[in-house]
Image (cartoon, rainbow, N blue to C red; front, side, top):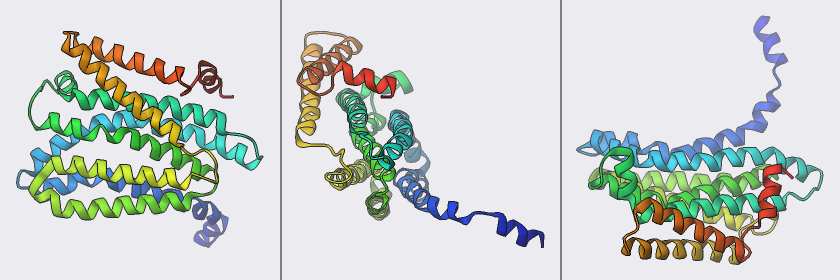
Length: 278
């Protein structure tokens, strides 16, 4: 009788409505969480390779948390305005531009000079870990796109494309890992990670091209690409003339961000609106 009464008091509609979110979270986790397990058991030097990949992925995961946190914060904001037919686009677009620019510039610096970050964090400036870090960091902008555009789809009730994209990324990357990890180790894991996140991100960009509005247009994409190329070129130029690595990175990223804002990427007024939550 107690069990029957408990079952009758549970509102199973909550579990049904939350099930798609649980499935999608599981699929997204499969892309990154299976590498250590598979490397340790399939590669001849499994423990060492798993450690290398974990050390490199730790950076991507740490910086990627910002996209996850901001995306979670925007979820209730967008869903509330969507239900009341309000305009969520100004805040969402400005937030995305700020985060994406930060991801692009950070990925550019860490891909160009991974040995600098490896030396600071792990006291190694050479070796396979440097290659793993340099390979993984280009996935950071894609990871931010997944979090932000996925949040947009989820908040507006269009989670089905998000789940399909996550399923394709999880299944495809898992199958490829089974063939490549035994022979190529952590380096292959890094390439597979990038190869899983970017198609996933592009699929979500395609899914948000119409309704719900808030997709990434061609002009915005070109701004990110030009910012990355400008940052990389200026960074190499400054390093060639003897600037120290931290000062060169700081100057290159700030200059690229200012140019991005000047040509229409995002204004100070938009950033202020985001910070005020309006």
